[in-house]
Image (cartoon, rainbow, N blue to C red; front, side, top):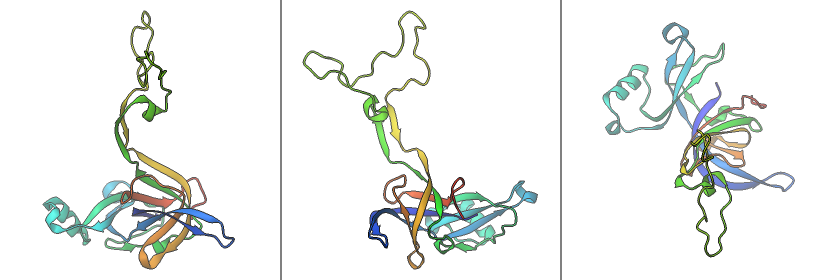
Length: 211
């Protein structure tokens, strides 16, 4: 499985043995708890559900409390499901920590990008602006969208203003530079999606040299 949930803390830099500065993102990863087991017999496939960050009972409804009580797991805020490979076995209530990840491994990190709200075509798509001189009435507006006579309509998928950001983004083959197990921290090279405090899903890289 080798998947864990975490929270983005921020960015800093560390130095290699040769003195080179390495930009890293600090992630508070886990610990996560196995909150459900799915098998071929009961669900048609093998998977586990894992939970991150404790949740108060006062903020949980009865179906949630019943689900966690059934599997003997504590209440959790964030849940995700992970498919299991053949031969992998886990138990309900089992705790998975960042110590199971090896330094130097390649990771895929998934997060939700920062929301920008409604934006125009320049910020959203990087289009050019119009003339800024006096008399021009076309500064930051869209240009021609369709021909007048034929087809007399705007094609689907035309780039226009609209909601920008807040999308699920995965960065692939990110290097795990350092693991600080006693503080549940991992340092990964470069930037990852989302704001500070944003939820992240970290797993060994599918296409890269994951362990």
